[in-house]
Image (cartoon, rainbow, N blue to C red; front, side):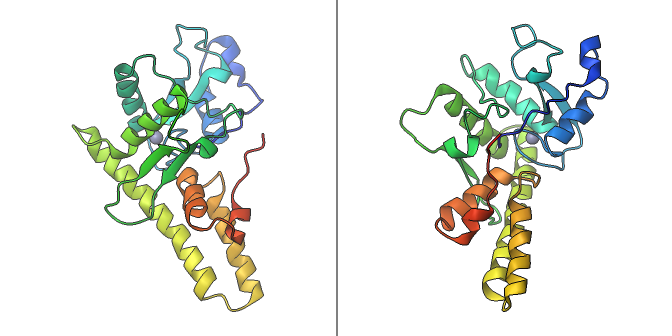
Length: 224
Ligand SMILES: [Zn+2]
């Protein structure tokens, strides 16, 4: 989960209380990713209301709409039911930079369990704690039918991290010319961009292992 810039262009249909073309507008705004897990593979997607339709959020209010995959939508409903007064960080609000507040750990190793934690463990807000709880369930859910999807999703993240690792290996051990180094740097930057899948995990892969190196300069910035 990373911050997403809300497209200022409001789909016309919403003023006519219709969702025509809204899914398409959301998927483009979200770089073809689910806003929670950041997978690009999900076939079925749901328009989600950030605040419940019944509350002030509004059913046809553009600011209140996001697109989630089937798996995340199911887990979110389950978690929201279990947690009293469930609060979720609003990824379109840049007052909170999600990847500054929440750490996403995945080392790219098969059979690994990913870890998602508040950066500051003492005194994290309820919204941060609830969001962390939800994200951990999304990737590590281990009972009933949703466990299979959680495992498939984690495997997808692990494979994506492996791609980043391969590029870093290539850069470190096989680039003997400045030209090749620069080309690989661009590839790594692309791999880390907000348009790529599982950006939050990749940002933390670099932050945890390569702080103070040139790779830090390749991380996406979240200035709105
Ligand atoms: Zn998802």
